[in-house]
Length: 117
Image 1 (cartoon, rainbow, N blue to C red):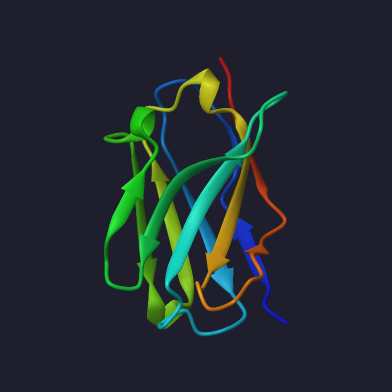
Image 2 (image 1 turned 90 degrees about the horizontal axis):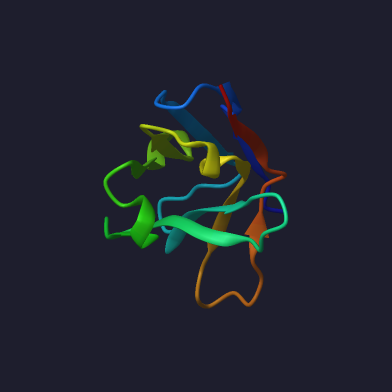
């Protein structure tokens, strides 16, 4: 059973930064894609950032330059650094693990980020 546990969410003011963490119960060394998604109030879940086991990164266009995804395979952890946060970044952020040979998607329970003055 794959488990993903996110942490690092909280309430911050506009312009501040946060780093989210997601730790897996299994080795992620060979996991093809680790990703972050988010779901804001009244919105669908959307991709924030993804990183392959070869080091390639992909970001939602509006977030490029403010958000950075990186992974520490030795710690079985993927991170999301979020800078210059805006109120519209308020959402529950979910970690996702995906291997293309596995039809299942694995999700964490989510961590809430609230950006408010």
